[in-house]
Image (cartoon, rainbow, N blue to C red; front, top):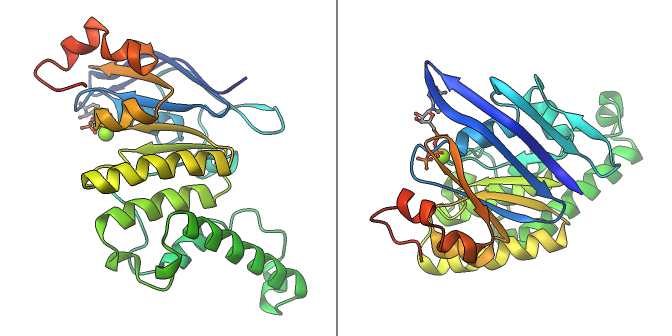
Length: 260
Ligand SMILES: Nc1ncnc2c1ncn2[C@@H]1O[C@H](COP(=O)(O)OP(=O)(O)OP(=O)(O)O)[C@@H](O)[C@H]1O
Ligand SMILES: [Mg+2]
């Protein structure tokens, strides 16, 4: 079953076709890569898939856990997020002056089953939900090894940990499909290696479908089951890592760069 299906999507920015007639899908539980040179249109595709931009042409649909197909055309990002779609950003967007834990909790308060009044009088229900959120947040923080820093300001975390917190936060929303925009950017080789394991662990633990953009080819080839390659807004290849590495169009697009 495809949990995400984008058909023939295009977007034009002031005459520039940033994404041109791209069709991509994700099967439930897949770990997909979206690669391509700088400016190829990768982030723009994520922006369309998460409701930040509406495609000029084409359609985007997600299938939620109940099997309902939801077309996100014209839907605002917060509504797309409610159907179980979350993301991280190329440029880290944490609440820098909130604690690590609060960054997690804030992303979890979307469909709480209690009234504001209930919250004020601290009803039993409120406390239960708070406890549930807290436990869930801590469990995810443990997975990314940040539970020991739950009270630290997000801004005080080293860069690699801020990236991990972003991923943790995206999962805390209860998302079924998570888009990661360059999760390993700025990480050193050992952090990147750890992240590769971490992403796979989180995917299995939380039954996620993951689509990631990444320039680190070693990382992509190691963890992605299937890869899409974009160049100048056009999809030039799709396949398993082995096929992508030997695809002449891909090699040409990356001319002068190391793919392997
Ligand atoms: N809001 C916008 N307005 C105008 N042009 C835009 C906008 N967003 C993206 N673009 C342009 O669309 C093209 C694709 O940009 P995009 O950010 O999607 O590339 P990318 O593949 O993510 O590149 P990188 O690897 O550098 O992050 C670029 O030419 C970019 O300048
Ligand atoms: Mg980008």
